[in-house]
Length: 232
Ligand SMILES: [Zn+2]
Ligand SMILES: [Zn+2]
Image (tube, rainbow, N blue to C red):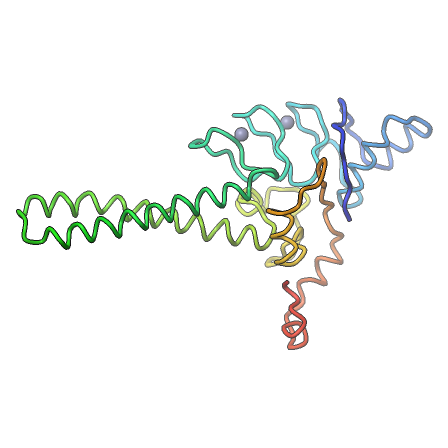
């Protein structure tokens, strides 16, 4: 279930559950966007828990307030101090290509370095030792970059964020979700398309699927599922 929101919701500062909002505002037009936002969450969710205490807005699912950027970020992944910006809905794909580019560059540098050391084998021992000492941090950087690349590839394939993995137990709407179930995953192909190729106007807000649907997804793979490419 998706909702297309093309305009920013004004100042929505309500601390009530959906039923209470309806009860208090039977004819008012104001809470329609608020009710739509609450529809993205499982029934019974309280808007108090979902309101950003800094922006005073009800956060759509997968949103988090970044204190460095001082705003709420949709599909918040993390705040990158190297790039000086948050990684979220709009730039996660570009961030993946950034790590891929960096990793490729370091692999190329390591290869050239090893080639240089190999050619220079007959040189002085001091020169060789300096070369090896400089090679070590380069290999450490390469390992870190490759781990980061693998992590973000996994996140892209399963439509998850680093924040959701790290704080799964703390995020209210992820509590009770069976382990190994990726609640926002729509299959590998669709996840990759949404991340890198979709060019929709506005934002597509993702609803938290009902718990019974998530529990059904936790069932083990059968031969039929493998043939039908259930994960794709
Ligand atoms: Zn905020
Ligand atoms: Zn940030």
